[in-house]
Length: 171
Image 1: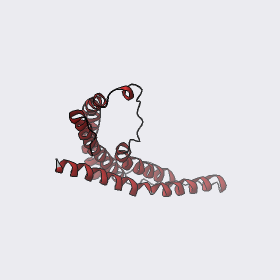
Image 2: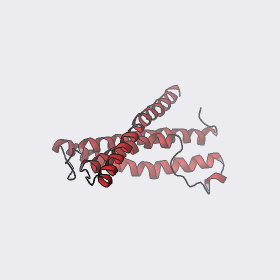
Image 3: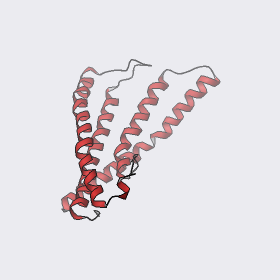
Image 4: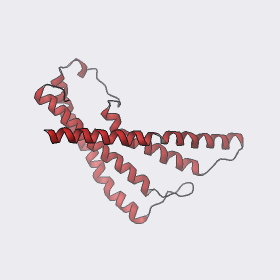
């Protein structure tokens, strides 16, 4: 049990550190977009690199924050029915849906992404837009974000399973 608590705390802390570290890239994203808007509309000199930089930065911030967002309960949730259910019944539903929908979906995405990531690295794949930046790092951080989300799914599953079995919230 101590090992399980240590694992949960470790995954939660790791996801928090990653999300907070990558959140600072928002400032770089705002600067990039501001530069592009000023260059385009004030000087009639749009840039080619802005599109690539924007989707790279947006994806990096988004995917590295997915797991932490789930950890703090920030994802959209429709609780119209479950809010009126007892906590154990709610936990049973969450356990069921994590096992069936979450893991089925994200494990398959993970499974399909891995060969594509390996092929992208082998080819040193490049984008066909702008300055043709390499996109294998892009695919790598998307894969890393999915991995972090799957790890957070393990934590959430264990927490809900604990509530289902004991009836108490985990500490």
